[in-house]
Length: 261
Image (cartoon, rainbow, N blue to C red; front, top):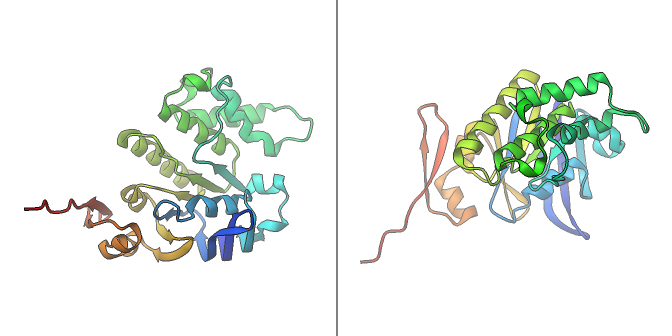
């Protein structure tokens, strides 16, 4: 069974499609990265999968039509972390992470010991236990990103949708976050679908890349097949050289224009 199946999906705002006729499938336990230039429709496609914007076409989550899922059922199947999440500054890290348990609670139910244990486990796995009592407003950018991921992990879904999870992080903190996410994915068998601005990071962590441009699929496949200098020139208007690491992963290097004589 595929974790996610899209068939001719179009989505947008106010009746105006931003994404057009996207069809693809995502294997269970894989990492699928959506890349593309600014305004390509990456976040819109992710929001359509999360049920946050209307769409045409078919979206299936673990073999079930997304439209047939109630809001609570979808929240038990799909965890979503937006690019710019609302972080109430007065909430502690623990209280914020507890929000991830909401889909599993009854209308008037309080968190159980099992819910609190799940939260503690999520914090521990992201090295946040020591910050559990800290208020969100006091966290650094990297700590706040980990708190967002802890909330999504506490939701205990089989599919994670992450919109630019490394936004605002320097290369070290971004790498650390992606390494933690990859380790958790492998341990839990969770499927990750993310948008990533950094093409080199996308190539190193994702199994499959989907390149969007002007809301349409420009290419899809293994990172080494999708990321070519010619394709980046065409869709990013960028002059680049694509190198390979010792591990065989593509690295996208911008090329400076030759200085005028």
